[in-house]
Image 1 (cartoon, rainbow, N blue to C red):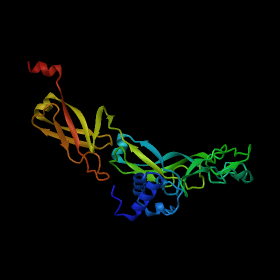
Image 2 (spheres, rainbow, N blue to C red):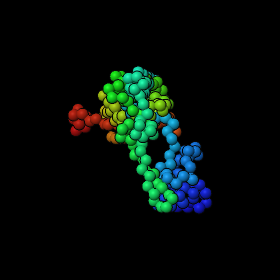
Image 3 (cartoon, rainbow, N blue to C red):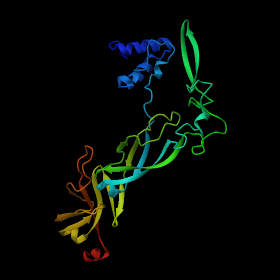
Length: 300
C-alpha cells in the first residue's frame, strides 16, 4: 500500500500502526470517506483513540429501505401514485424522551450522559488506548427514566409507529433494482431521538413475465417477448396480427411468405421505454405454428 506520497494517509498509517498494528485498515477506512468533513472532529494528536474507528458523527438517522412491487403494466407505463409507508417517528407525547413528564427524564448517572463507558489501558509508557462499551443502564441513550414513569404512548422507547405517505412518480420503462431516495421519510434513530429522521430508499421490483389476454409476455432488458400462435395457413402464406400488449396499446405484426416455427419477428421500438440510459426496447413475436388434425388430414 503506497501511502508515502500522501502526508495525511502517512500520518494515519503511522499512528495506527504504532498504537494498534492496524495501519492498513486505518488507511482503508480513511480512503472510504471521500468527504474531508468526515474527519473534522478527529484529532490525530490524541493518543487514546482507535484510528480504524474514524467515522463522521451522524448527521441524521440511518436510511430505511423498502421494496415496492409493480405489475408488468405499471413498469411499462410508469406510475404516479401515493404509497403508504410505515415509519418509526419521535413520540408525539413525550417528544422522544420516553418519560411521561420532563421531570422524570434525567442524565444517566453511570455514564454521565455519554451513553458508553470507557476502558482505558496503557499499552506503552505514557500511551493509552481507549475501548468503549455501551452503557447497560441507559442502553446507550445517555438518559434515564424514573421507574414507573415511562411514557404510556411509546412505552418508554421515545418512538411511535406512524403511517405516512409518499408520492411515487416513476417513469415508464423502469426495471427491477431501480432505486429512488425520498429525503427525511425514513425512521428516527433508535437511540438518539434528537437526530433528524433518515431517508427512505425505495427499490422497485418488476415481474419478468405476465399473463395478459391468454398470452404470456416476458421481459428481456427493455424488450417484450411473446409466443403467439399462428395457423398453418398463416405460416405458409403470411399474416397480419394485431396484438394487444399489457399496457393496452396494439402492435401490428405483418409477415409475408413462409414463417418457420419459433421464428422471431421484431417490431422496433414497441417494447419498454428508454429509462436511465437503457434504450427503448422492441417487441419480439415468436411464432408458434399450430398444426391441427384437419391440417394433417389435408396433407395426407
